[in-house]
Length: 272
Image 1 (cartoon, rainbow, N blue to C red):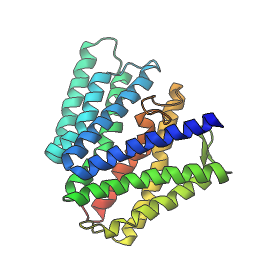
Image 2 (tube, one colour):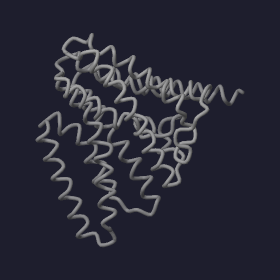
Image 3 (spheres, rainbow, N blue to C red):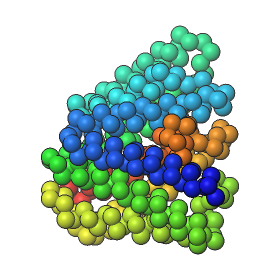
Image 4 (cartoon, one colour):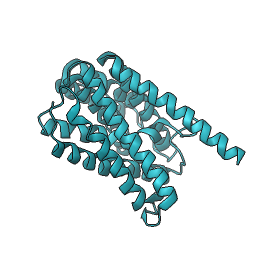
């Protein structure tokens, strides 16, 4: 019992520090948001490559991690032109490495390229929201998106643990249940219903509910994707940098896809 209490305490402390840091950096300014997302992208990419390297792959962690960290910066500096420019430079550098580093295989090129896109490019959509909605409320909107992911995870975990009977994907993630999924969906929709009240976010309740459902669904897909990667590479966690939670990629698995989906919902609704 004492061990379980200590483990729960560690999880709560880590989650509090992690969440508070992202909330604060999102609200302070666009620059702090970009810096935080760039660091987060780099850490997630580093953990991704570490898992794949141990699976007898030889990705170029240095190039991939740098590219992942630069994706949020590229949008902040040059918007989509900046992102395309970075992607072109990144692809060229990786191909030069492939040509002159003879042990590298084409699969290593693919893993290197995918890792940066999977982490840095996808998380950059939070920067899209932060920069395209003016001022403080852009940061507040980012916080709402983060909260939708965190509360989805929390509701899914506790309801799934207590009432979960029907397994969602037992071969990939044995602890996921449909009961937990539905609870998380309710939390996601509830948080998204805050959006219409945010100044500068011209979102109807139809789009808010649509966004909550879409992000709830895509979030669980992100979770299952990372679970599949870990299972295929023989890892329980993506890393050990977050006590009680594993690695940064473990904390961002849902957010990676939710960030992109949320940005698209806000785009199609005419908000950004």
